[in-house]
Length: 103
Figure (cartoon, helix red, strand yellow):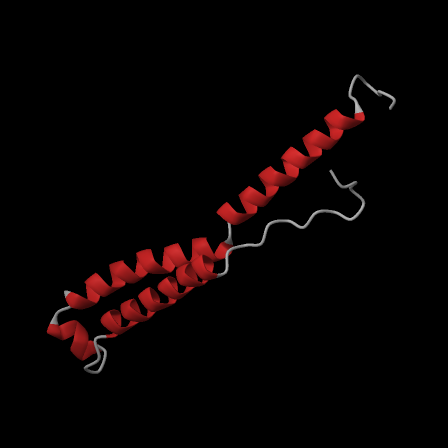
C-alpha cells in the first residue's frame, strides 16, 4: 500500500464512503416530492381558507362556482398525494459501486 500526498488507500476509501452516505442523505432530504407536496399543501390551505371566506359577489363573478374552495381542495389533495407517495416509496439508497472491494 503506497501513500501519495500523505493519504493512505484506506483514508481515501473511508472519505469516499462518507461522501456517498452524505450524498444519499441529501438526496432523500431534497426529494422533489417533499418540496412539491409541501408547497401544494401550504398553498392549498391558503386558497381553501380564501374560498371559505369568499363573498357572494366573488362567487357570482365565477358563474356561481366557489372556484377558490374547489381549487384549494384540489391542491390539498395533490399535496397530500405527493407526501403519502414519499412516505410509502422513499428514495432508495445509492447502490454500492461494482468496482469497490467487499468489506
